[in-house]
Image 1 (tube, rainbow, N blue to C red):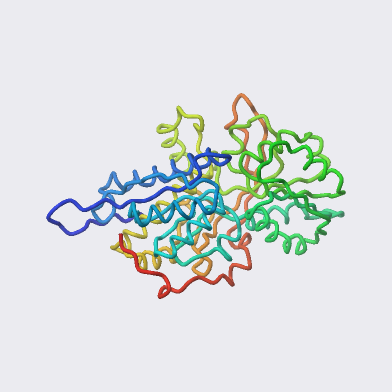
Image 2: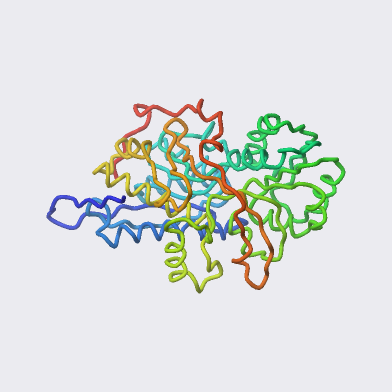
Length: 402
């Protein structure tokens, strides 16, 4: 249940709480950034309708950190030191999340990573002031690999990896699970981050005999890749994609996809889902992305979790709010999922239901294309190395009370 607490009467109006939404609004994740911002907006509207938090209005400001890690760090520095933002939400790209959250930790600013799925975000790039609300590629691939390798006589696995930090982090995380489920890693193919023509990459894949192909490619690159794959290839080989966001499906409704993982879909038969869809469609039904997906869902719930933590803490002091977020737990009804979700206090990574899905292309009605075929509990999908994550202590985290 959300908590909305009023501050004691003051001589004048209290200043607003500034939240910076940071996600690349240009480049291959631009549509993801828009979907993410919409989720944050919807959550903030919930609270502002009831008087804000601690008697203060919540104001969302947006900033484009670009996809460049150095530029992202500079943007974070400016938002904190000049704009005096209280909190930061967003990311999408894992390299953006890593660079911005390092700056946020330096000042003690709480950073809510709503949607980026590199396992490194809750391992080597984890911070005491950062909380990761998206499932990682390790969670998705653990579920998918078990499904793909079960009862398969020949278990040769090829990894198709985007040549960036997120691609390599996800590929490294899934290798132990390939071995755990009896697979044999027979090779890897690297796809350039600026993938203009996937022909050469697909030729390299075709040259390596494999039974299962795991794909760690995201955003517009994923759309380009599968637009060039002969559907018969997907019938001969078992291809899986660790995560496919709605923003990679809906704009390309005629493009086939193999089995993939997600955390939510608009047509899930879970409490609260249809009400959320209806509210979204009333607000954004006239736009290009007129149906909500997993990115909007994750950003909405992550932003709500932050605002609820501030309300429970009764203060904007970061140490108090961190303590509340570390205890975060949400029942299925409020999460619109089948299992309760909970924050791991060691890794600051939310553990949640993972859904296995498939895509039936329907250019005329793309919203009908997604189909959920199975689910995995948070405990079954949890990434084991996170039990050894090392965060800064609270004493090493500067106090910050916006």
